[in-house]
Length: 150
Ligand code: HEM
Image (cartoon, rainbow, N blue to C red; front, top):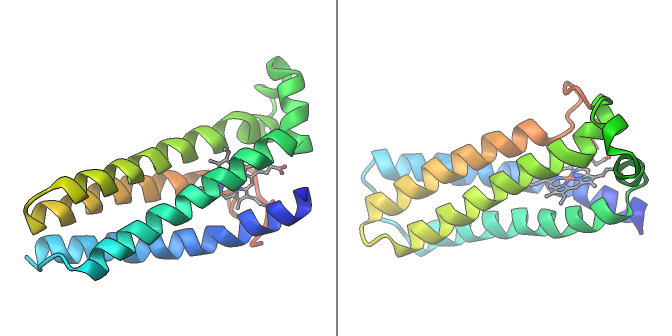
């Protein structure tokens, strides 16, 4: 189950990254282009939020079964001094959860806004910050902790 979930979580990152890029670009285009907020815009923002929530659920399961995280949690003092263990025990989870919370706030405040421009603006700002945080917490091949492309 661990290996299966790692692969699923790893592959789903590309769906998350792609949806976030499209959602942020469309939100900025709508905001600055004074466009009307359509059902398609709402669905794009919704599916993007669902994709990060799915990552959160898989990530939480992984957190409790991952041998890497378990070895870090067994000795947090030592783990804090180890770049890789600290990344998995603290940095990856904390940064992603903050990003996911911001995206969720962005979706719900955009939903409550009465003016189209405000809907686009809230989605653009919250999703952009969420995107930057999530991108910074992915173990890309160029990151301090590198897990390759897949
Ligand atoms: C959108 C948010 C997230 C993205 C894009 C993401 C992405 C990734 C990637 C690419 C990996 C490496 C997979 C591999 O080794 O091939 C990974 C591993 C992992 N992620 Fe996430 N993640 C996200 C959120 C979370 C959250 C919120 C948690 C915890 C609640 C979490 C917990 C983990 C754990 C425990 C591992 C595996 C550590 C190990 O055993 O090697 N992730 N994640």
